Length: 381
Length: 78
Image (cartoon, rainbow over all chains, first blue to last red):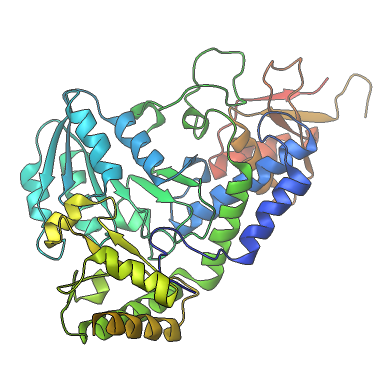
């Protein structure tokens, strides 16, 4: 079996991730922050260590600004619903995932004004168009870092400069890039970073988070949920302290233990090395698929602006049929269709049929890539 | 220890995460510290507090301030 669906979720997970989760459940298991006994404190330490590793990976500074959520979608919803009030204006790009577009369209129905900056055929928006879209009430710009359909990376630092000039915050959806591409919150000027734990960071599903940059105060955002935090328990009002304000209820301790081990895996291997490895494989894929008659590739040819995702279509067969045959006849697992991102497919011209997407991971080999290219060639012969 | 003097100081934090951050920083700096349940006489909170030798109080306070760890209050443990 050849697994080329790392952009949906990474698999197999590094053995240390599974070991960390087992260890948490077998040996620790206390409820972090809910008691003073040794197992509660030990659970808290493991969760804190994961915050620290993430703050280091994203150059975020204070680990207490890492808020855990159940996935990137949850983190994006926390930021959007937490920051935007009726009358506020928000700017986004024309290739966003539904994790951004659906909450934005809901907020739009409730008095938030939404501007969408279009992208070129490769999925890149012009930062100048963000500047043109700025209004007096612009509170937030929200963009993805790397596109889950094409791998195209957006010019985050340039768009951040627009946000700063406008006195607005920048929220970046790093679901695809965290753990796969360097993400430096300070250098890139990211105020809020939403990440998935189960993709490039190699953690289990059910993990993710929102990193709140130093320009955003806890008071600037309302929580999505309120409840027990283990802190200031005498009060019936939600505390304002980070991370507790946004982390009511028992955390996914075993999942976060696994995520911590996943982040360690990424830090040990080195994010630059992982990015270089995956980019080399994606280039091999694009070159190999590009030589097959009737294959159309999507996204930028500039590999400095790409993450390791390769989308293609064929004139001959539907994407679903190619994906099914790759699985059934060759044991090659990929993702076909719209990838929850209709706006991205409209931008690159593949709506509504979608694309076939190959996404290698840190453990993928050149031999597996060659086999995947050969399989597509066989199917399309 | 002379009569009536306490051996320990206790720091309370606003969040458990802050207490854990303080623990890590202080252990790295070589301080002898221990996380304990928040003493009921100091607060009704259900969290954890940091206990250490009272003679280290000034230095511990300085280290935590330099690291930017927000603290709630420092108490003498009677």
